[in-house]
Length: 114
Length: 112
Image: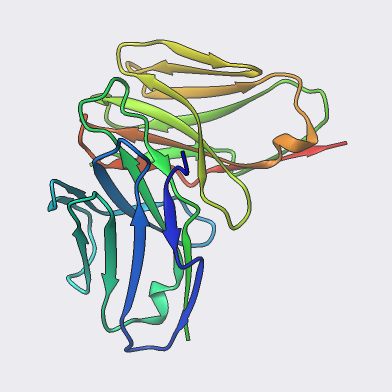
């Protein structure tokens, strides 16, 4: 079991550009959440996808959007990048309705906006 | 709105010491609480998960407790080792499908 995987591992963009980050959940998991982690802080919830729909959203602007595919993999898109978007982006998955519903996190994508 | 606080922000101990990391949360109506470990520049590794109906969970040298009434959880690490050096994060989830709210973590350094 590969666990949660994310790509790419690192990314450098300039202000105003657009970026797409990808996540494959752990086998058997159907729910994917995205988090943004700034240096020295805990992860902040961006949004969650289940059954290909956005189910919950944190306090992030519409520049942040996502998608979930039938195979449960997910994408995070960020438009009009700002310097403040530089962070580690984490994807987490769990199986809704399964006992305990432990969340598993991927290794993250480090985004640097110049 | 749930707020999670971890104190202290950093902790340094000699190898072999037993230690306790603290996590407090403002809303006691949680679904579960999970402790994670994060190595520098890496993702989060799940350590222990405590359901709201449970009081504690144990895994090897780790023991996590949960007291919903006081809004507190602790992570106890026995016989600390240099390999335990990392940032430890706690996260509460409000419902079975809800988001997790994280503290900012405690960075632990275990000196040989």
